[in-house]
Image (cartoon, rainbow, N blue to C red; front, side, top):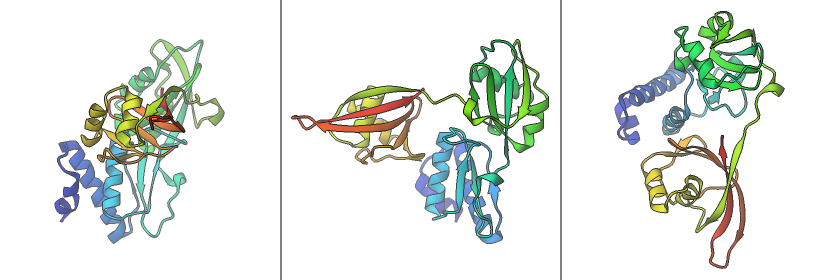
Length: 260
């Protein structure tokens, strides 16, 4: 029954097949045993895969949440009909590390310090680094280690405390990309965003490398709208920012922003 239900996903890696099966099982447990459950932290590709499984089962009582608005790495909460979906119930915590001195540490430095404690990547969400501090979102199960076991990152001393100050989080930066496209088809917009030919962009879409709003889209002629966020595997994340006027040659000016 489960294999038949997930057959639409096509060929998956062993890891993705196991994950899709896990989401399917949790949906069934929620329906049949009224059990609410949460996954580990998911990257964008796993989030998109989870959305496909949720949609295939017509399941709507779920939330993706990573501890702050617009989180890149998120946990999936699958709620039973007895529980109200809420971000407050997610088993995750935030740890802020105040750097001593000028800092100069990077995301990789903090991730390395956490993993040196035996913490797995799936237990760590976003790590947001600013000039003199960093915020790491972690699962509740590793929170104590993340809070109390790190006093130095690289050669820099740090002082940890629970929670974070939203105003101190680094603001998202973008690189603006502008140009004209023959239509607002997904492959056309991807071609401009990535800086490749339309035929290559079409291959990226049909090959499953492009997701829109967290869901993998394989239809190259799918229309994309202003405000849509899309990702290209191995390249980055973008937002279709503006649609401008149409030229005499019936090409449309658009603006795309790449997250950096």
